[in-house]
Image (cartoon, rainbow, N blue to C red; front, top):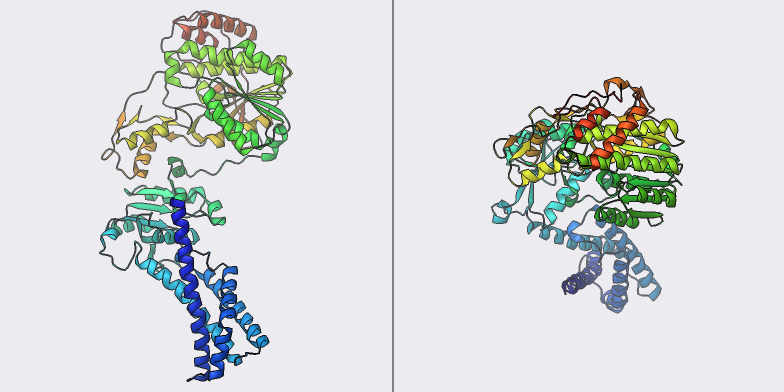
Length: 631
């Protein structure tokens, strides 16, 4: 019903426009004769005009329709529409010359030129008058005291270029966007002090805070899609010192495609403030070892696993097998990949890596060339409460997949590890360290190239701190931080996965690849910045509460063990740690004991973990007298 009404309104507007265009043609023809003779028009010319009026009008409307004068949104009329009008009137004038001359009802030649000028003026005038009337009744109207104008959100646009100007026009023309642009900010000195559609370019980025106070700005729209990350970070760090809500335009892609809209603006993320350069990877390397290969991803429905699947699918594997115990996650990524990659040979298998026979059957059936093992329990506090489950899933789930990869001659096996495996203070990190040791041990006796990739926290993963902070801010606080000095390394999931794939391309077997996560970030500072970006004052509008370190939590994470040294790779963000020498016979004996104890649900499983990982700082540590596994 709504669609029918909208169609009727559109047709009605077109009919009105056609009628006014007919009047414009008539007035232009009559006016041309009137101006040509500068007084009374001779009778025989009026008769010719009357005789030819019907074919002239039919041809004119047909030409106008052909040039789509009835398809433009005239409230957005610009120089492009004016150009179309001029082109249309030129063609119509030439058609009139032919029609009048061929029919024997010719007019003085100067009339045709005068007709062209008048018709251009009338057609253009009526359309731009429509835009002017729409503007008068829009939010910025001419009556600033209007109640509606007073109720609008006052915004500042940073960037007085193409994107900023287009956003401004959308704001003033849309009745659904309740904003009023008070000023522009631009670092280009040639624009400062001038105006965009009557709105002043107040100054450069150094004037942001001053402009916010002067104009009572409530929201800042950052429309500089060409800015690099460092420049954007500089601007955003100034903006966050105001109490304004800050939004940014994603990037140049939208501008280049002419798709810049107010809806494209996204809330500024705390990562934008870091100003890090984009991660660079060699796509040819990744494509070279994934393309036309059978690739299996365990834990493929998780935050890291699903991104692995996305990037692998883009590299055109021969077959992609997703293995996950959680059917909902697996189903979601299956739908996503099928919709995006219609030719992808995709198999989704529900399975637990703990189930030895199930894992073996999957390897026997699919014979994968490459395996990314991302299935694991990763939540630190929960694993402190359920350490036996961490051992069963992380350690022996990994061992099951490693054994199957060895048995069925998988070419390359990549373990997804963590910085928490370095000098671990929690069960989750200690179990991942054992996984690294399993991978290193099997690499020495297998044809399969076993490697591990270790990295820190990723933004947006399940359990990540930033979604929690945003939820707490939305609820009005408080924002909870465990310790004022706690720091973490951060990277986005796509960035981390790109480097994981790149590291996989470098693998020769036995390496522990360590990803350069950049500079560590103070979590308390991150919380403050998120509060500011949301338009609030930390500890005034939104409180920050320190709850104390959780069980197994460190103030900082180490990406590299002291014993391992460091080797470079062709990618400056990927390093190789030298494998630790260990007594493998003792290691596997202890591993067997650990399995028995875990499935016996013993309460002191941490003691047995310590035997395998001497660097594990067990909060309930007991004296260990057995032979050390690693040295």
